[in-house]
Length: 181
Image (tube, rainbow, N blue to C red; front, side, top):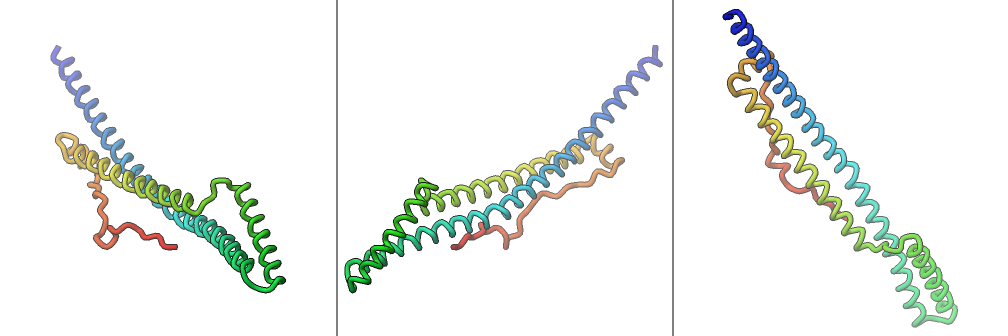
């Protein structure tokens, strides 16, 4: 009878040992995964922001050029020689065709809409980066607590589970990136 009790106690200890070890492995992998999510979001930021800025610049430039052509041509209609007025009228007609073609292709294309979209994408990207950092720090905290708590600290020591450091941002990098046009 005492042999069965000893075997049962040893089995419980072994099962507990395995569960603690597996828990540490799971948390260590979550730490690695959550750090890779930060990389994913930083890569998204790196790829997205310059492309959005260039897109907005392109649309804004096109609209600005077209509107400037219309304004210059309109001013030419008011004054100048008859030949200059005819040329101005042709310029207005060409600019209006360009505006209509642009409006047909992109009915909602307005520079302010692009700026609003850029602003929204920048905010979304920054929120995703911030969330990924928070997730990483929470996962590291959970891992370190389990690694340092008794009795899992014995298992962590036996299998060389190292302490993970929380993500911190140097003081010089705490400013929001600036986007200029």
